[in-house]
Image 1 (cartoon, rainbow, N blue to C red):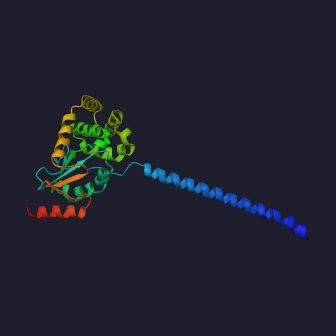
Image 2: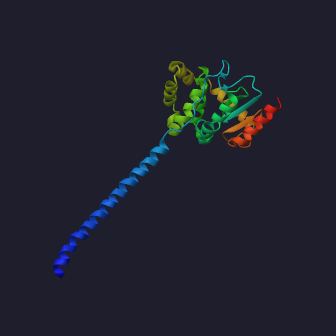
Image 3: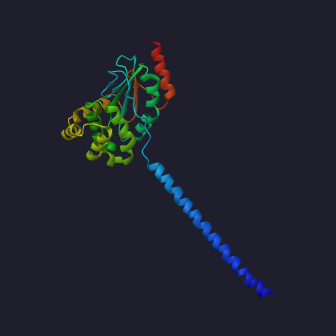
Length: 234
């Protein structure tokens, strides 16, 4: 009886080991899939709200957006390779546009501040944005650089990559290529850098409301309070 019982017990232990192995394999597959999902999610292009251009004539002018006679002007200094700038563009700019720009109370002005630690892409991106502005397509191109090009790092800001972004945005490729290859906007980018230095700016994003620098561009409540205060004076 004892020997027979022992022989019958062996298959049970083998089955238990098989079940354990299957469980371990299943758990391994699950964790590999989970890691893949995390990597995919982190590698996806950032979600940047596309600038709405169905505004009155004259409200979309080069690097400016909004009523030219708005009582409040917001200036934003950015680098297209700066992750914090991408966050400002995705989180703060849409609020400004829906609450103040679309109503004609605020005009938003963009300024290039390419940072040395993001070169050479930062300078090429700045020039490309001005080439897009020549075709009055600055804001769609601006949004696209933050939404898709930045996630690729320097590879997203080579000449070929910037031309492809221009094509995807609907720009005239030939004019854009000529603009970039001639570097016709390099002096403008350099002048913008010098102006930033004069203002004491060393990081991006930097923000001004009616020529007064905002301590924290991401504190929307404080930004809103200052804009409301200025509007109340008019």
